[in-house]
Length: 199
Image (cartoon, rainbow, N blue to C red; front, side, top):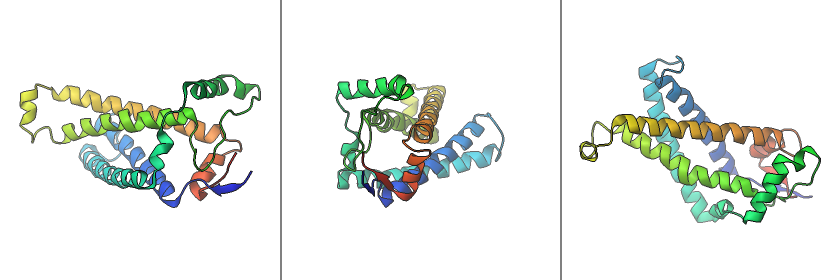
């Protein structure tokens, strides 16, 4: 098994910058909702807005990078048989020492379940959080809302639902990244150094 550069420098910088900004948005967002008090409501609201704009900027660069390098293909769904094999591995085989059905290479970094998870993040969770956040931020400035009849409470609920979806994704991502590697913390090391063995 050869060790290769699995994650390029841009991917690692993007990953960790995005992680910091998403965690910061969750902390300040839940403070705005009154879940805890850390910065105070006004400061938390201002920080939440700054972090959101920063994350939008990071995502614009990431979308451009994925489109120009062809890395967007990493997120294309796999066959249903491949997905079922991964489900069987995580629910049964992994506990009895069964072999991993997916072999990671530089060209295929994500297993079938990861592809579905990341695709749902990019196509459903992210648009939900960004669109609701955008409407929430500019609700008082756009007269068009008055004609749509959409109550502010609905937008707030959609934004909160998006936050909980991303929090759930984050918890699952951390569990799988830290506990399911071939070696302890192997995935964490790979996202720091970029190097990992092709299997």
